[in-house]
Length: 408
Image 1 (cartoon, one colour):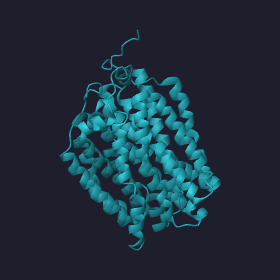
Image 2 (cartoon, helix red, strand yellow):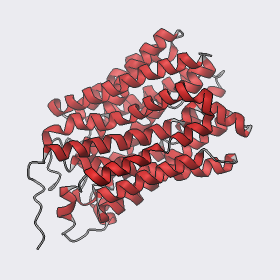
Image 3 (cartoon, helix red, strand yellow):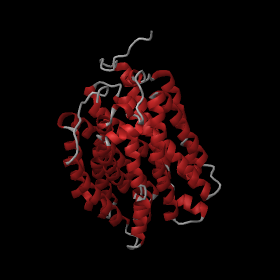
Image 4 (cartoon, one colour):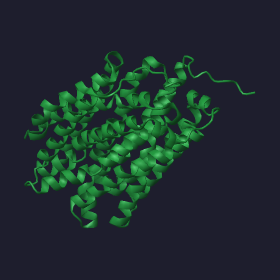
């Protein structure tokens, strides 16, 4: 007989560290691949002889298809395990990133970015469920912030690549370099074990995902609306900021754009970890509400300043708040999730919310085009509205801090 796994046993700290490293790097490198595009809007548009707004549709496609990926990879992970599906997922998005660099036409480029969105959509749910089911309860807050800081860390790496390599390799070379995350699979295969909670649940009768979602319909709807607001919050403050807002509207140099992007991504990493750790002390909802609320008075400094110094300061503080709120999301969604579909639920509601917010870049670009190309105004309106919505959603939401991952 196989040895029974006790999912409530105190986790092995050394093993937990390896899982955290793998999940953090997975999300970091996934985000790195995604953010390469936002630095290359104008270059891609020039290659295919179209306007920037047309190229922003690629972001919409990527974000829209992430919900499909979350559902596909999440269901596979709930059935076959978090670890093997995480490896398949990382290989998939790395290969598609490489293929993007060889896209011969704009149509092929768009198709590849849509397929990349499917692969990208699976990673977050797999990595967060594997981590939260493995680590000690007392780690959850700061690890949640660390995992989510992988997103701005990936943005940071894409910024460094843009600053150092873009003048030499162009947009195609940047996407080819984006295939390097495939090497992470070797580390996961050799060092990362399967989730103990999943190993225990695998012995139990399977419940159809539709049955679980119907049972928790109110929670599902609430979580999707919450994640729609959160995705408008992050993408509304990031996607057009470097290449379009700083470059097209303010005409800043390559070096200035790179410097400001590095500064605000450092703020994002700080915010994610700091607010994630704070949530372990005062609760998930209150911490998210504080972070989102603090973003509101920063909007004038962030969107309407004119000098590089003030815009850099505003962007740094804004991303502390945006990613500070986001830093609690991995643990909050996993604690709210029904245990039977934990690899599916957090990632699916996250990416379905992403789908509902996927029009953000095109929406902001279109609005700005009709308002004398004022991208700052477009970003300010989106971020201000959704920050207020997030605060309201936290008032009426549920708190599930420190709930058992095995018995929730």
